[in-house]
Image (cartoon, rainbow, N blue to C red; front, side):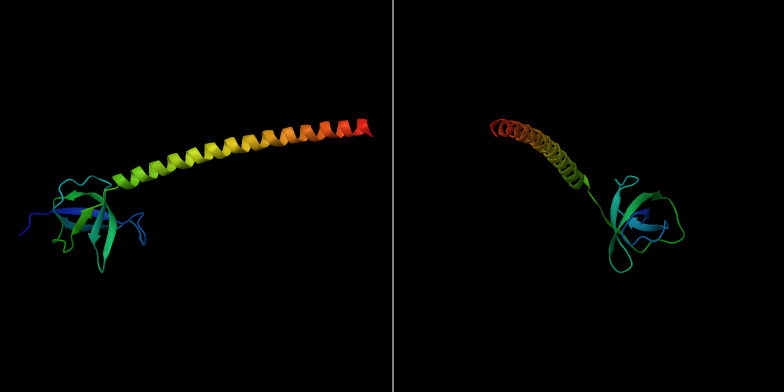
Length: 122
């Protein structure tokens, strides 16, 4: 028989979550940390859950297992890169907006100068 620990999880903040009830699953993953996202073998499918800690004893033994820890490293890196690109785009758009404003001012000045010249000629 596999040597396992009992893990406590909840589904708070997960899609379809209905409250903060805690559940228990078997796991052979020894490196889980509080707050880690995990995949669990739930009632009829796989689900994501929040790891809340290892427990020493409960009444009975859980039937279901934690399938794996979700590694958020690559996802978090992508999100940071996307935020950086969005910030660069925003800076670029602000610069373009400023250039447009300057061009509008110049056009207004040219229009006024043209109007003055036109009034002197006619």
